[in-house]
Length: 292
Image (cartoon, rainbow, N blue to C red; front, side, top):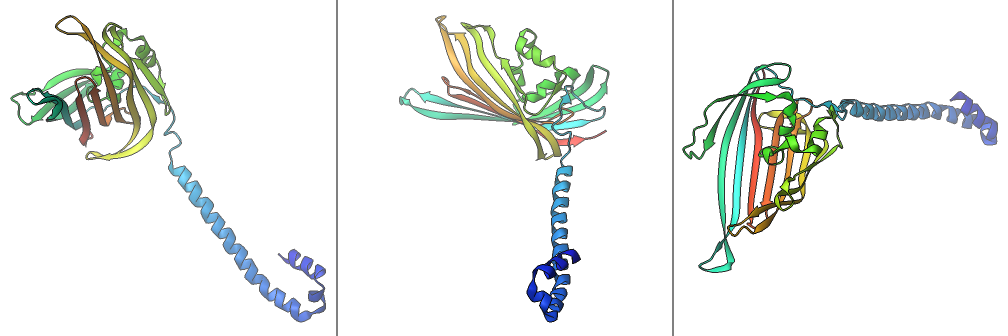
């Protein structure tokens, strides 16, 4: 700072010849020094805020994670399920162009308790309730869940529609052979069952979009957001005259699985059949989670 002042004294003849001017300039110098000091403080604060913001984002959030279902013995998860079926039913007695909307809602609760584990699987007990009461009793069921079946939570509920007959699905088996998954990955799974003239054809596409924090009744979780769509999906079935009919379908959904455990936190899936005008919407949400 003083070097700057000397430089100004040498280059400014008015200051060199005027002691009062020099005195005035010297008096101003501390004020400028304060301004520079405050400017440095302000810049430092901005840098600290930026660094803190960056550091608050876990660096390993987008790093690949091992593909395995990771529960803990003693955990208890309660899910609320919603299923809504709507269809446009032609009222033949009036006109084929007039339709009435039929809707059926079915809600249920699924309780999963992790009883034990070994190197490959978990033993869980599943119970549930159904509303409205349709006379169906859901008895407790003890079953084994393979840790390698993490992918079931990628598309829930009704994920079995996509993962049906996976043992003979080479494209899906190739994905399961991977050790890890990362943000930005895309899985394109063949939907083919049977052949092109009888069965199902098309593709299911799973996009692992990114890490997202979501809040559900059970709490707040860091999750992997997965978007599910279909492409050229058709079901080919014979009618009473043995004529093959092709029904075009569309699948759209979103799943949120806890990043690291692959525990299902929330999911929805919509299936639409063009010809029959039937739409099935399913949703599953974690409403209670008890740690061991």
